[in-house]
Image 1 (cartoon, helix red, strand yellow):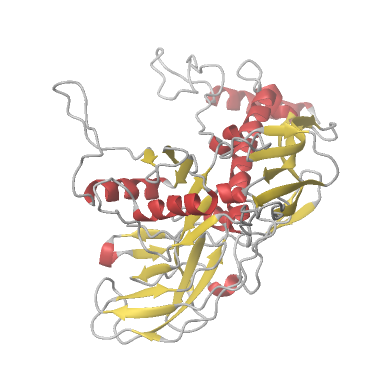
Image 2: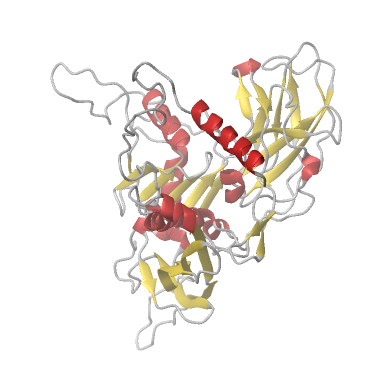
Amino acid sequence: MGASNLSEVLALIKAAQQNNIAKAAGFTGPTNAVQGINEYDLEPGARLLVPVTKLLRDMIPRDVGGMGIQANWRSITAVNPGGTNPGVSDGQRGGSIDQTVTNNLAAFAHLSLENFVTFDADLAAKGFDNVRALAVQDLLWSFFEAEERTILGGNPSLSLGTGNTPTGTPSTTGGTLAAGTTYSVIVVPLTYDGMVWSTFPTITGSGAAAVPSGGAVKLPYTRNNADGTTDTINGFAGQKSSASSAITTTGTTGSIAVSCAATVGAMGYAWFVGATAGTEKLNQITGAPSATITALNSTGQLASAGFASDLSTNSLVYAGLLTQILTSGSGAYVQDLGGAVLTSNGSGFGGISQIDTALLAFYNTHRLVPTHIFMNGVDQVNAGHKILNGNTNLAPFFMGGAQGDLGAGAQFTRYRNPVGYGNQVLEVVAHPFLPQGTILFYSARNPYPLSNVAQVLKMKLQRDYYQTEWPVITRKYTYAVSCDGVLQCYFPPAFGCITGVGNG
C-alpha cells in the first residue's frame, strides 16, 4: 500500500472515530440503561422463580437395591376366599382353607435428562452467577417434575386401541353452527401424556358464542439425544375412531352434543369436527367422552395429520399409578362417569355421591379406606360448590373467624369417611399434573396393620438420583441427572380412580 493510500485509510478511521464521539455541552441523564455514563444496577445471581411440583414423589418411599432387569414379588391377596365353614363334627378335623397367590413383576426403566453450559456462557457469567451449578440445579428440578408425571401416568403397557365411534344430537340453540348443514365427527382417545402435552384449542367467547381456534394433539416424534442418537417418543393417543354418521343441523343456527363410549385407560378425548368427511379439525379436548360443538375450528389440527394407528404406549418409562390402577385385573376401584358431573348426595352430610360410592366399594370389597383424594383444581372447586349448594343444611360446616372479620370462599380440603371404618378423614389435594376429569384415590399407608408390607407403594430403585458430568469433547460442559427403577405397587386395590368427570 502506497503512502497516499495509507493516509486516506487513516483519515477515514479518524473520521469514523470522531462520528462516534458524542458532542455535547455537558453531561445529561442517560435515557437507556446500557448507554452513556451509567452504572448498571444488576443484583448478582439469577432469581429462581419456578414452581416445582413433586407431591407424590415426596410421599412415596424410595428403596435402593434393585437387581437384574425387573422387580419380582409374590403376594397373598386372599385367605379362605371360598369361605370354608369352621364347624367340625365330634372327633373329626376341620376343613382346609385355600389362599390366593399372585406372581408380580415390574421392569426397571432408566430415566435421564441433560443440560449443558458452553464455555462462552460460563465465562460471560463470571461475577454474576455460577451458571454451571445453576444448570445442574435446573436439571434436578426438571427431573423432579418429569418423575412426578411418570409416577402419575407413565404408560409402557396399557394400549387404548381404536376410539369408539361418536354419535351426535343437533340442537337449534347453544351455538352458531349453520342450519341445514351436515357434519362429521371423529374422536381420538388420549393417554395421560396426551392430556398433559397436547395444545388445547383457544376458546374465544363463552356459552353459545364460544368459538375454538388452533390447538393440536401431541404426535409421536423423534427426539435428538445429547450423544447424537435418537429415540422415538410415543404414548400420546390411541387410534382415531371411525367418523360418525352424518349429523345434520336443522332450523336456526345451533350446536351439536357429541359423545362416545368410554375407552378403558383414556384420560381424555380429542374431538375433530368438519362440514364434510375428510375435513375434520380439532374442535376441543375434554376429560370426558362427551362435548358440545358450538362452532367450527378453522385453524385446528386435521384428524388426517396422524392417529391412523394405536401408538398410546411408551416403552421407555415404567408404569405409573394410573396405568397400574386401570390395567385389567388390577382389582383397583375404577369408575367412568361418561361425562356426568359430580353430584351432591343431598343428605345434609355434605358429601359427593360418586365419592361416597367409591368409599363404600373400597370398604365392601377390601375392608379399607384410602387416605387421600387427588383432584385437578377445576374438579376440586366444582366438588366444593356441589357440597355447599346441594345440601339441605350447613350442619356439617363450621364457619368462623375473628370478630368483625369478613371472609369469603371455602376450601374443599378434607372428606369425612361416611362408612365409619378404617381411615376416618381423607385429605383432598389439588394436583396440577392431574388432568381435569380424573380423580385419584390414594393410600399413603398400609391399611392392614398385621401385614408384612411396610409400604403399599414404593420406588424400587437400582440406583437413585445421580449426576453425570460427561467428558468435554466440544466447548461445552454437559451434565445428566438420572435414576433407574420402577414404581412398585404391592396392592393396587388400595388405590382407585374416577374418570370421565364432566366439568360442571
